[in-house]
Image (tube, rainbow, N blue to C red):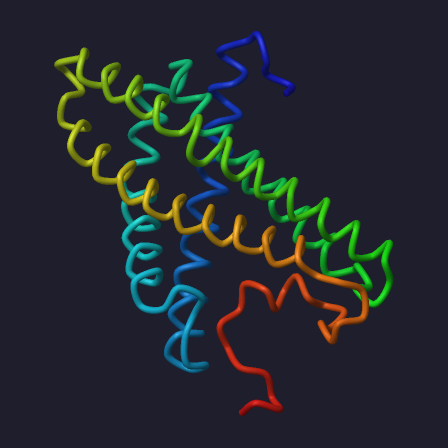
Length: 206
C-alpha cells in the first residue's frame, strides 16, 4: 500500500517481497519434505508434495530475473502483490481460527465467518484474478525480444503455481463447507481449524 501510485516504489517493494518469498520457499520445501519423510505424509499426498516442490524451485529460479527485467510492469506487480495478499490474509484467518472455541454457538459462527472469508480471498486472488493476470504478463514478456528467454521458464513457473493455487483453493473451500455444517459441541476439537486441513491421524487413532 505504501507504494500505490509510485511504480518505482512498488518495484523496490516487489524486490523485497521476492527475497522474502525465496527464503520462505526454501524453508517450506525443506519442512514439507521433512514432514513427508519423517511423519508420513502431507495434505494432498505425494501429488501435492511434487507440485509444491516444482513450484518453489521454479519460483526461486525465475522470480529474481522477472524482478530485474519487469519490476515496474503493472501486470507483474498486481500478480505478485495479489498472491502475497492472499497468502497473508489466509494465514491471518488460519491463526484466528485456531483461537476459536467450537463448543459454543458464537465460536462456530466466528469459525464460519473466518473460513468463508478465507475461501473468498483464496478464490478471488488465486483463481479469478490469477489467470487473466498471467495471460497479460506472458504477453508482456513475449513482446520484448531481448527477454524472450524468460518466456518458457516463466510459463512453467506460472503453470505450477496455478496448480498449487487450485490445490489451496480446494482446501479453503472444503474447510468452509465443513464449518458451515458444524454445530456447537458436536465433538469437534477446539483447534478444529488446524486439523481440518491435516491428513495425519491423531495420537489416539495411531
